[in-house]
Length: 479
Image (tube, rainbow, N blue to C red):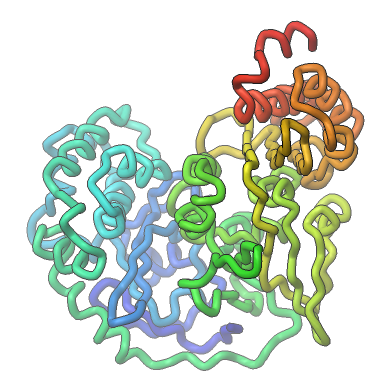
């Protein structure tokens, strides 16, 4: 949908708003500078700290609302048309609510600058989580930084709240009502569907060939915020989010606008790749996962793009719509050079698809970064392998951070095909991989270091998938 400079209708807390700023102006600036709601804090403007976190509510079927935590510093105005935007002021009541009370009681507040973001993140957890799992609640605040408390008081707060509120007896269709009864939400939340229905409908503007296509915008609004403020934008949204990941005719088909969180929580993908939940938690925090899309990650063409490396090892195909017809492109052929892709200005990625692996198969995704979680990889890699009678029948190996593009290691795959999984085979595969890469020295490590990391990740793939057949010590002694 292309959004012109006409007023964008949405609800801001309790109020109907028709905002006339440009569609590329981020909500953080509108919230603070236009509406003077200064509980939403301005800090990193890169989606890293959570100080500007808000709830974004969208209507779903049967007059239900779905609220997710998002970073308002990366959320453009044009993306909230017809939605409910909630700041900390929209959560507050005459007295502190149970989340706020518990933060005070457990010593989870010092200067208070980060507190609104933590309250929003925990509110989103209680709105969406299936059960009161403290570890999941910790993940919900993984995108929130506190520079004062040392986090111990915040952890105690989370443990106490999860003990107090039992989400297992609260089905999603009743969750908002339950959160109102628990005083986690003000009562006005019950009337939001009716208020949204009364908003004026924005008309899609005529297509603009010069419009910048925006899906999640989590990288775009970090790199080019000033340009996007006044540029014409084309907001890309999935046609049917309920079917964004589906199995059909022996393939898994993924809508290009599918978010990382939708990938992580997809039952179809979890059945195929049980580690995807933890793997994708490492990639980015919940507010980024709620906005960042698979299509955006691929089109950004970063040499260390986690999703590109993940789907390269699955030999994914891209289905690109053009003026005349669709054309399929193998992902391994999509990246042409640094930040250059096989897609014309009049073409649009519609879907990604991959053949369902033949069991028994193994899949492994690994990355090395300065932090284990929520950090850009120095080197990342993924491996898909199918065996028959102990012999490798199919293998796909990818790597990031070792070339100008996310790299499919074709020669290494050809070497492994038809071989048995033995230590000498893995060692030689690691040597072949070194001949395919061209890392550079940068802030994330020297070229030699990155080559060493890739070797270690190849070892890690095989040791993870074949622990009874391979020995870590033997690999390292021989290497």
